[in-house]
Length: 545
Image 1: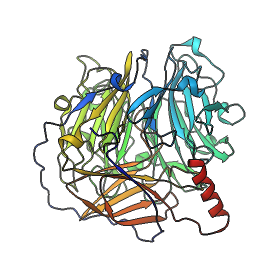
Image 2: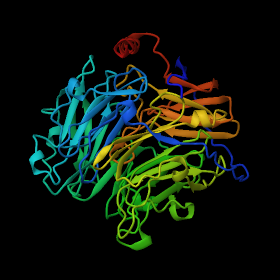
Image 3: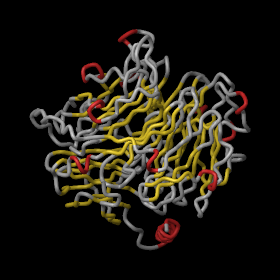
Image 4: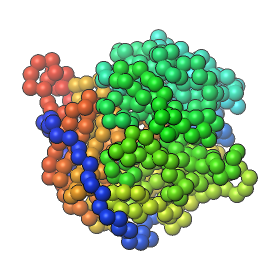
């Protein structure tokens, strides 16, 4: 595989009022058989990952992001109980743990984390959520910590006095959960939703200058001390504000419908996403290419209620405000004790595939990790076929967090997961070698001169012929995890793209026509021509160098 087989194109584009039209559904046509030469190869040890082992418990988190702005995707791995965190800096596909040298020390009880630009300086800061479950000796001064990245890519803790130090210390019977970030009130500052298992959820408004205010009391989550796992932020109703879905263990999920100001109502029941199984991880993607986001939620198959408890697949039609639960119909209900999960176009054919790792299945043998390949039509109901054994992803390890990222920048998506009591596992894809006729594009929306430099909450749509494909730019997904703030598209045999449309978090759009494939494309809003906006834009460009 080529490490640098791509072209970087930095583009500044003008705003356009055009919208992203949803393609009409073509007649159903079943794709041909999968190319059995597709493989995932466990390369972790050979590229510098490990040898840290993560201790028994409820797993640990992983975050994929280009934290040092060099174009490569780096990995942060929460240490768990008794282990230090790892910050794997990527240099051309080879990783070095720089956590100690970077100032990320004394984090042996870290459970999950999140990269986000807290202060708009184009440097990713790091929020870390600590866990005391089964480890009373790990009790530290705070549950949630905030580390500010410096210009030399080192980190300084700024928790005390930030407002994030208000979460009470978790006791030894409480798991830390996960973190998600997004602009909930339209001020371009990235707010936080923080979950715990059995102690509740906190919502923090970002006030700028590394200051946060706890606004949980203004939400339906106030006083709900229950068993929460992964939160995700996305615009589920197309009104240009971020709503919040929260996977809820044992009880009904939450779908917090945002009115645009950061005020919420729980619309889970009205939307049909209020299943009450053992929901844990969440993937967001337009699995049927119909122009709206669907949800896949990992679960504990058969844990309490036999086959009545399973993974759930909430699909949505662009003509219907609600969701339909289709996991059994699509054949993706059984993932064992499901945790980390992601949508990804593994084979670059233009259809979203689905991956999941798991830990334990109640009452019997372990269930291997899952990689369901989508062999359905380009637009319409997906048809998932389990291919993990043929591709080399059928491990029975106890997988926890799962992320996808093009770690070697060769144009296909690789997979990485934390594993209980084993080192992190990184799986390199050979898609660009096995299927060189399938093209690809990576789009990186960026908003220099704003407080949301990574354009979290943006939606990227591409159009090829009569097919549109859509991706979300998010911070926090899967299970205690985070995928990079970039949109990867498989294109099949398409050699050019009719339109690339970036819908920014404020609802404006940038449109680019006739785009070449096989490149990493940076897209920004229009450059301010004069005044303070231009000054801030130029400053941001200097900071990014």
